[in-house]
Amino acid sequence: TNCMLQYSYEYQGNNGRLVVTPLTDRCVLTLVTAMFLFRGGNPLGPAGTGKTESSKDLAKALAICCVVFNCSDGLGYLEMGKFTKGLSACGAWACYDEFNRINIEVLSVVGQQVMEIQLAIKAKLKRIIFMDSDIAVKPGFGVFITMNPGYAGRTELPDNLQALFRPVMMMVPDLRMISEIMLFSEGFEMAKDLAKKMAVLYGLSKSVLSKQFHYDFGLRTLKTVLVLAGGLKREYPELPEDVVLMRVLRDSNMPKFTFEDVPLFMGMISDLFPGLDCPRVQFEALSNSLREYFVNGGYRSDEEVFEFQVNKSMQIYETQTVRHTCQVVGPTGGGKTLVIDALAWARGPAQNVTVKQWIINPKAQPLDQLYGLMDPETRDWTDGVLSRIFRELNQPLPAGRENEMRWLIYDGDVDALWVENMNSVMDDNRLLTLPNGERIRLQPHCAQMIEVFDLQYASPATVSRCGMVWVDPKNLGYRPFFERWVKQRCGSGKEVDPQFEDEAKKLLEMYDSYVQQAIDMILKGIVNGEAGAKLDLVIPITDIDLVKQLCCAFDALWPPPQKRADL
Image 1 (cartoon, helix red, strand yellow):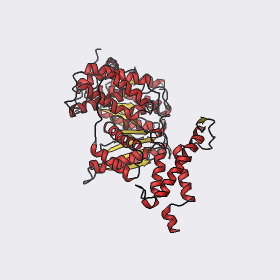
Image 2 (cartoon, helix red, strand yellow):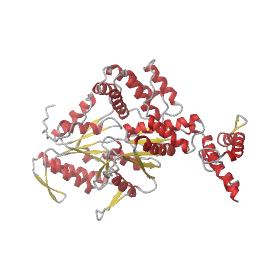
Image 3 (cartoon, one colour):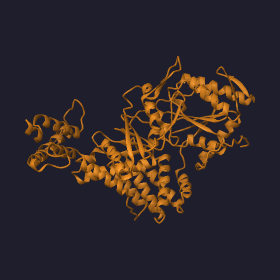
Image 4 (cartoon, helix red, strand yellow):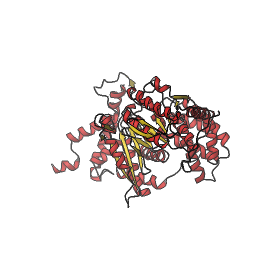
């Protein structure tokens, strides 16, 4: 191409660059030609294909300031106009992420605003009247929009907008080539062979493993693994390279797999890396601290379950080291809240880090009350619950509390309505953009966590941005709950008091005789080992909740021994 664009000398520091694949090449050619012809660029395609990153990387190459803004359906034309006005005056680029989430009425006005500036640059005007203001126009101004066509809550672009932007379809990134170059840049000498193995493993995982809503084997997951592998190689330079990569692939993917998929994935790992076995990275102080929490809380009964819960807390910690947004996924009654609370407590004694949790149910209030509302008449801004908490949490840490960690936990259903507004926070931009144009950066001392039943209504764009930890009730069962209740009823909660040992023994015998068979009959329809029809429940209920109800009813009808002594 014979296009010429001005180099802007915007200092951006020594930050990373993208791997240039044929897809990136084609995207950059189209975007540069569009800018040369006084048009904008429109990279579009599914999640995790590098649309926003390609636009930002082109800005880095030309040393231009590129401002990323995550669009939501709460944006009005006045806010967009204010944004465009400022960028035009300083000659910066705007990258509007998820542009087609804006309402169609606003989009057509935005098209007119962008066209006015583009025509002014084309006519080489220095100043124009824009939205009743006299503003400067610098020729470096450019607009890029990225879109996921066909996702829930998206609109079609109006014709006047489509004419202003050159589309680039970003479909399938070259995982093998990206892995190879990134491994070389991280210092691996066997990068060619290892990249091939990684691409094969991710391809097989997509096709062989079960189809779960929270699974993602795309570019973002791959990049996380590669960065983790580089860090591990520098930490343990004496380890062989294939052992380093095998260890990272295993440890970073295992947390999200369901009970049935674990042996399948381990089989694929052992086929690709035959004869290799390496223990997990040990965080001994943290592991001991977690064990102390579970023992003191009376959660240690079955050794297998005890190890499972310690392991899950460790997996959340490992996921948080590479992703600042983590989703703890699993059906009710699996112990999600317990493993999160255990990790929050254990980081204090083990790492001298005080963890504070702020818990929000995102579905408890309308979207306007969650993110805030701009009054259409008076243009007054009213803060939402989340926007206010988010701003407060990301203030600099006060003196004397430098070792504080703040977790914002969303405990509720995930759907495209509220979580899509968090997309720019969850990816590498780490920015919450509000409808009033405010941009709040997620600081290193803050992390986000989503505790959710499943991700049936989340878009692939959300799933690919988060670290996933699957907590399966099958691993927990309901016996540990009953045994802990017995310890609390007949002792201190940590262990049974010797004087009430007979009652505790009797309760466990009754459990063995009746509870298992009763739950099998109610939930599975199994009577005396033979499958029959399940019982119809008015309200669906989990096995652990049935045991919980039994324990509450028993406490009400036959008070604990300590209370009986007082009567």
